[in-house]
Length: 305
Ligand SMILES: *Cc1c(COP(=O)(O)O)cnc(C)c1O
Image (cartoon, rainbow, N blue to C red; front, side, top):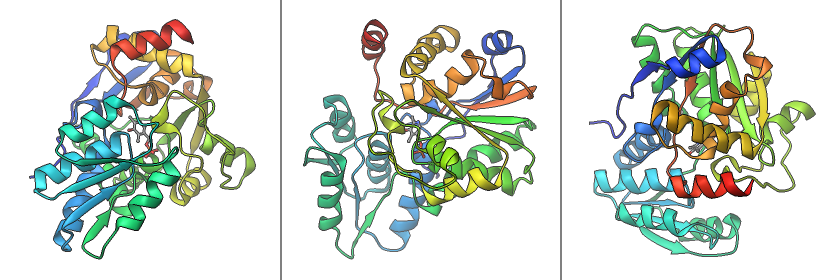
């Protein structure tokens, strides 16, 4: 049995009325570990298990680490997640709750990742959070489900961190013959590595990242994501942290679902009526989810931003 579930696709009355076009939501927030990540991570973990891996190692303190921990528990394979000291107590607890061993090491992700790499033996599989073709193949399944439901959107709105979701959605569009469907790739200010690459016409790395949407905080997008931005119809959109949090709050009222600001960024493009959406009548929004923000945390951001 697959480790991810087939998620609901629904037309949002509230968002459609607000934006004066049909807004369709692919509810990846309902995946068992709380985000779309399990689609790709699940397929990758199953494949690495088939190839004989006896342990999974990850260095993501976010939704990817939680998905690896979930996959390991389901497959009966031990998981180690090495996270930096900056990883929140909540994220550490969620990883541990899935039965994985959490090792806290270093002030920043680079140090945690270096330890994770140093621990790898030939029996281990390392799970990258976004730069692995197996992940993209798994993420692409969400577009297959949309096609099976009989919907062909004019545009797909999605959040971009390292670009694994973007690569997967693009693969899904391609394998359904939907090369004419536009992509609207949304990032937050301070984590806009795709926007910087598109502007520079080069896959540049940001000198630093700063955004409350920590799941989008990759300094550089993967080569596949950059290639997609150069070869497909893609609009790059950047929203503020405040717009992303406001979108999370409105989404709680409109759809009764809590998502983190990384997902709120994509929703903010719809709530904020960005001009890039103007040409499109049927818009699919990937509600990527994320479990790192509680309602209390969202309220705190609303009060302080
Ligand atoms: C990982 C993640 C993203 C970004 O995905 P990338 O593949 O890194 O671009 C966006 N939202 C949530 C909730 C995530 O967990």
